[in-house]
Length: 89
Picture 1: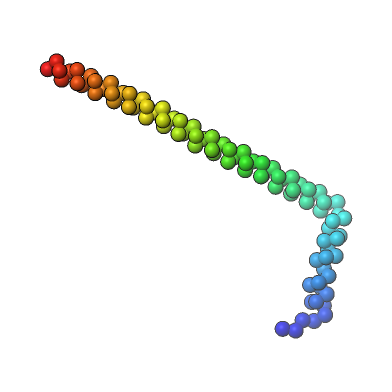
Picture 2 (picture 1 turned 120 degrees about the horizontal axis):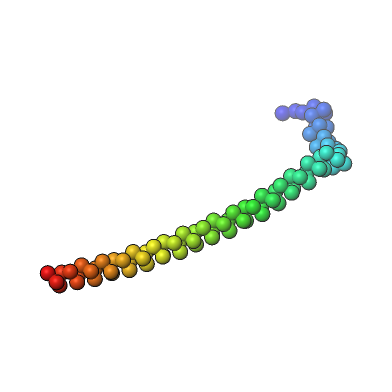
């Protein structure tokens, strides 16, 4: 497909020139800095979220271990009580 000179100039020159202009524009610089700051904040929050998720998983594990221990102890007590009652009968 043959392209005209206009398309070639636009394709090869516009982006570079526009980038240079944008880098000098105060509003563009401010928006770019705010975007960079928001990305860093998101990364920080993502790390904090991952740490919170890990902590929650550990706490669920601890909770389940404590519950299982109580259930086992109660089962032993119930068994001993049933056994003691059966001996009396």
